[in-house]
Length: 138
Image (cartoon, rainbow, N blue to C red; front, side, top):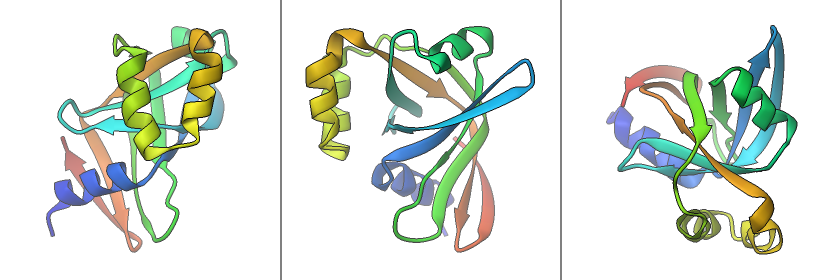
């Protein structure tokens, strides 16, 4: 089995992650839509400015996430993500994320000036396929 191929397929087909942060030993999890850029191995998402999570990123840029499977038991996760504000232009993000999550267009169209794009970089992940876990290095 080609585990990297499986990872990229999961990241292409799934549209949401459960994103976990922690500040002062208090964890916080929320669901966000994302786009994974395979050539860069970077996961992108947007958030409203001044949200709780954006303030948490400033205090602790280490994050974890797991993709949220919709159809079968295949998902990817990492506990070694580093989050930061992205330099990716909103127009580029809009194009790719709206192809994946068409309903996101309405959010961007209505609130573009209130959104910030973030990116998560990570070098290792675990993929689960039919309850079997496989560690991979990107």
